[in-house]
Each structure stands twice: as C-alpha cells, then as structure tokens.
Amino acid sequence: MKMWVLAMVSIILTRSCYSSSSLNSFIYVGCSQLKYNPGSPYQSNLNSILTSIVNSASYANYNNFKVALPGSATADVTYGLFQCRGDLASGACRQCVADAVARLGATCAGATGGAMQLEGCFVRFDNASFVGVEDKTVAADKCGPMDDADSDAAARRDSVLAYLGAGGEYYRVSAAGKVQGVAQCVQDLSVAECQDCLSEAIQRLRTECGSAAWGDMFFAKCYARYSQRGYTAKPENDDEVEKTLAIFIGLVAGVAILVVFLSFLSKALDNKGGGK
Image 1 (cartoon, rainbow, N blue to C red):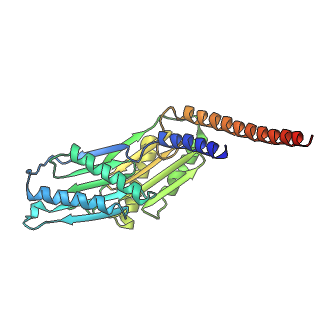
Image 2 (image 1 turned 180 degrees about the horizontal axis):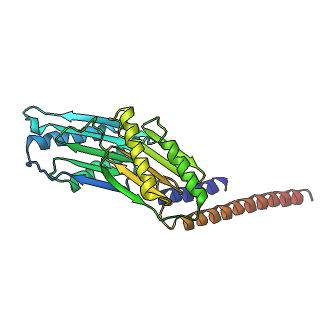
Image 3 (image 1 turned 60 degrees about the vertical axis):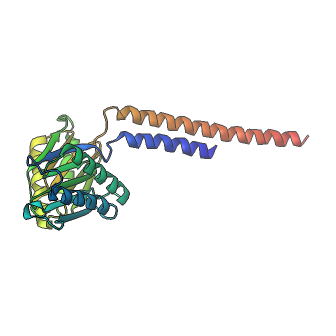
C-alpha cells in the first residue's frame, strides 16, 4: 500500500509539472528574406552547421560554429550558435535544440538566416557573422495584466529586477516571495556586453510593464523576465490543478492512514482470537 500511495502522488505531481510551460514552448522566430539556391554550397554548409549544433547540445549548453565546406565561396560561409537556459541538463538541452532546429527548418525554409527562441533554448544561423556582436534589437516583449492594487508585489518585483541587473553570471535567477525572475545572455557576448544588454532589457521591463503581474523582454542576444507565478507562465487553470492536487493528496494520505489503522486492527483481532 505504501508503494501504491507514492506512485499515485508521483503521477499527480508529474501531471502538475507538465501543466506549466514546456521547455519547447514557442516565444519568437525570425527569418531572413534572402534565399539560397537548393543544392547550393550554402545549403550543404547550413545542413552541416545545424547537425553540429544539435550534436553539441548533447554535452554543452552553448556553442558557436563557422562552416565552409570545400568549394564554398565567401558568400556560402555559414555561421550558427545555440544557447540553452542555464539550468538545463544536457538531455533537456539537446531535446530543446533539436526541436528548435526542426522548427527553423520548416519555418525558415530556403532562408539564408533564421533565429528561434523557445522556452528552454535559442538557435540562430546566418550567412553573415553575428557571433560576438552585441545586439539589443527587441525580438519579443510582452506584459501581463496590471496589478496596481498589490504594492507588496510591486516591491518584490523591483527587488527581483534589481538583483538580476546587479551583474554576475550569464544566467541569473532571483526570487522575492512569489515573484521570480530570470535573465540570460548568449555566451558569445563579453561579460561587459552581457551586463549592458541586460541592463537595458531590465530598464525596458520596468518602463513598459510597470506594475504588470509578469513581463518578458527578449533582445536578440539577451532577455529578462519576471512573474508573480514563476518565470515560466502557467496556464490560467493552474489554480484549479493545484487545488485538485492538494485535495487528492489529502485523500490519498487519508486512505493510507485508514489502511494502516485497519491493518493494526486486523492484527489485534487475530492476536486476540489466537489467545482464546
């Protein structure tokens, strides 16, 4: 019975976990308007670099590549990189990157350049070098509903953003009460460039999202996010899921206690019967 209880709780907890945003959740995509010729050296270089990106994600959370196979002209040289979220294990990183590469292939078919940001990873390729170049172009920005009535939440949000902007690692997380935040740079940037990029992203979050319950600011080479419900947004029905989870675990615990009680009662009756 103990094993059954643990299994049931595990199933419900797993279901609750999957109800939050997936690492493969789409955030943005961009494709170059320039096209390459099918069967051209550029296509061969591109296929090679995308394969290298997926393979490298098996053992690293960041890498960049430059590919020029024999016979390639200067215009055929291909550049690419990937960046996984700093807390991802290698298996999750590779899965996310492989999904991003597959989606890029479908969305940016024939394009000489493309970039895709998913919840857990970022992939970009182009025929012009962009590696090591700071880029604060806004790729995606979004704010949640305003929450002017909750001054405590606003203070916690400010505390989270202040920590994220204080400097340090390429990947940063912060929390104050229920408010959580995350910020990250693509690791081809220098530490100073990363700080400059994140400082502007965080400032724009403050300005544009005001007292919003959550906010996302994605630049081409960095991003900053915060949310009162964690830095990955939950579906609107998550409150009901959490209530159901709490009720179910309570019922399971109650059943477990009842079974234990009945087991002791049965043994006591058996002992009593054996003593006659």
